[in-house]
Image (cartoon, rainbow, N blue to C red; front, side, top):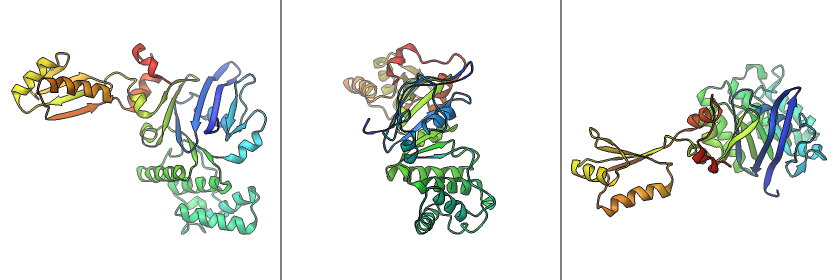
Length: 321
């Protein structure tokens, strides 16, 4: 586990008769963005609370290590390695942005001089210098979220839990937050991200896990998850009707579109499948004028895995990890 920032095996949590997490396994490599997706009530926030030591897993759960520390024996050491920014800001609107930063520095037992230096550096990094002396209640949603993350970084955590950090932000503020997350990764920080925006996970995450009814139903890169869902295809278009007819004869399993002079073949978008299609054309001396690959997006993945009758086609289940 030396290169894992988070390693959880058999994570369980129940509240009375309601099982929220039922044997969840999560492995998050250092210096990456790991995104946990799932519908409301799937257990995402509960998972974050357990991994960030805010609540305890059920007795009998498997091992949980965060920052190399066993949560069952040394939760304090794990707390020193992490920072948490929730979907609801921890910023105190009654004091200024600078005062919020200095308060956080006091909580981390920094000296007055070190606290002021750290606060100044982070306020500059997050473009909050001009607003530093203003009450945080006057900040926009995006500014409050930036201040919230800046406050989280006062303790120099190596693992940051971002629980729906862009909820309620406008598109520009969301993109600014994405850039902040990328910069954190460049600095070697590990980010555990829960989000309701599938494009956000697609854009940022190195690996994604989909949580449904308390269990992980699929895990992998965005591209791996997209290939689990049927509907992907390769589309070939021709400008020469004769080439189109010849290609249709060679690719007899393709769906023809005579009006567009196009052929469509089911495909998972893999390099191996594309090479197979092109080799079949090459062997017949046929060249397509256009080739495009269409794969399901994360919306398709999400609704297939978490909607009514959720599930992955049997032929794709061996790809889940």
